[in-house]
Amino acid sequence: MDESNWRIVMLGKTGAGKSSVANTILGEPLFKTNTTANSETSKCQAETKTLNGRSITLIDTPGFFDTAVSEEELKTELIKCITECAPGPHAFLIVFKVEKFTEHEQDVIKTISECISKEVFQYATVLFTHGDQLDEGQTVEEYFHQNQLAKELLENCGGRCHVIDNKYWKNNQQDEYRSNQFQVKELLKTVDQMVEANKGSCYTNQMLQSVEEEIQREEEELIRQSSGNMTRKEARKLAKFNVFNNLKFKLASIASTALLGGLYGMLTMVQDVVKVLKKYQPEPEKSQASVEEPEGAAAEQTASTFVAEVAVKGGVAGYHAADEAPQDVAEKAAEAVTEEGTACP
Image 1: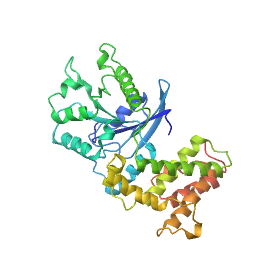
Image 2: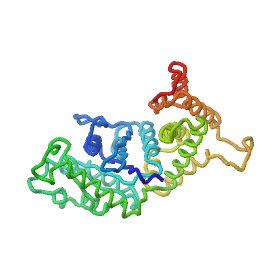
Image 3: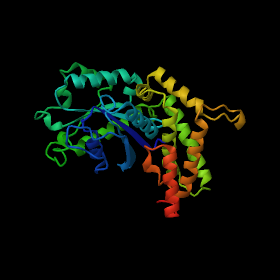
Image 4: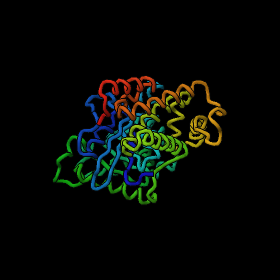
């Protein structure tokens, strides 16, 4: 488990401003944002930057709890999120706007409470956006004090709560509370304290650990095939890409609700996903001929192996085609080898 890097997953309803929050925290526009009411984040995105001597990976997610995307699209992005945050996140940021809590917001909070286990809340902090909606001198805790659902959510998260404003608080030096620089510093301090309280561990479960094991196996194989010419960082990135594509096949029969529950700690859903993953795990004590594979698994493994072999020769050219089937990715990587003749940087 890499404890030198914080993995932080951002959760929240569509339009809450998660992408803008990520840019504010990292201090540069790495995440695409949208000024309309529609959700900009329809795909999972992860970006890493060093802040105050600490490497931070922010994982921006679609509106898992209220998104209108199709089941298959949601499933794909959930699998990508699982792959990116394995073996588990050090923190969850639950993002809401400073606004009146309507039935919509209340439904999102109920869904989060139902889908997330109590253990996850030990790693969660609530972060409010649109801080300019607060009255002068008012704190965000005071603003939501009268809302029972919001109050319960804050209590579940150990009272951890921060507020920023992606538009108006960028350069505010007059009021420390209404300064993004101050709030981001305090937020990172809260995450630091939370990680310390959790004895330096990240949130994990059997499903996330199983995915991490797959990534590590793939990583070692890529390094072996490259005869040591691939760096650990390059191998890790490509291993995630290969495992993501493999998981799309392996978990094709798993509903997005089960994946969501598996990621956030619902025991029965974790077990359901792990059962599927274990069907595909190699059994070293048996010969290759004696291992029974599910229908299509042999073809999938062949495609996956081809992706790995070609990618070692052609670099990570196929990495950005992560939404495509392994066969399509293999073709793109093979084309890169033919056209470029050298590994991509």
